[in-house]
Length: 333
Image 1 (cartoon, rainbow, N blue to C red):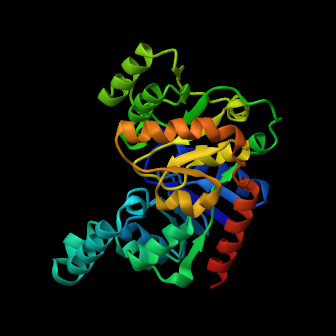
Image 2 (image 1 turned 30 degrees about the vertical axis):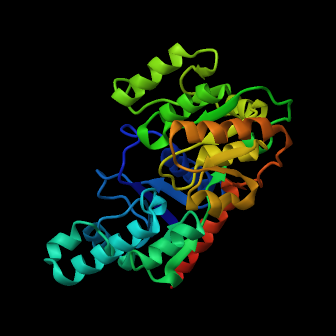
């Protein structure tokens, strides 16, 4: 079995959880004896049996692959779709139906909805995303498989330690993650908060606003940039009073699951993905004003020492084993 891993967003342009997911998937598959390599777009001699595409593969490319005898497994993170309200989802579903039935074919083709129906299998991170793939994009339910993200052993095996005073948030410094709003709420609530992460670009206006705010409130907001050393990050999660991620949109947060692996209590945005993954074993905050967030943040800060830890997530080895089983089914279908 030879698998080619491909993605439409270069890591050079947008670091983050998706990059970690792809890299860890490749390592774990290789450890299981699966020949898995990254797509070499310049190499016409590259061979494989199946393409695992991270994202929504363009329909024309998907057809080319299948004509070459390659199977295609598509794994798109439905970050925006998964965070929409019921009314928004219904409106967009109606728009897709109208576009595919009444608009010129070229108009509908631009959205690449057909890829969901062409792919040999679709990978969803959560049952919620699996539901959306079927109901919103028309993927055949029999071709949809739910596979979680994994975490590295360094998080699951990190030694226990006493928890300190800092809440921890590890995320890219960008509007979608609402890092500035979280920092403002932490100051209003007088809850110490350690932000770990980097912006996509230092000169980004949103990031600059956060940098300025953090410097002005150093007693409560700790910011020293990103931390690439995984063992060090595990120590921080183990010592954190709680983990906080209040994104406006999310798919399945790797940092939240890494914190969960370290038994860190979780405060997450009240969105379907979070309930789908953690259920009653996390605390939820509605998307609202800084004042609303501050009230929830203060309550979570006070309760954190008594909260039960979230369930341990899967390892990348377990994830790779699930993927290998899916590849085998697709290749023998």
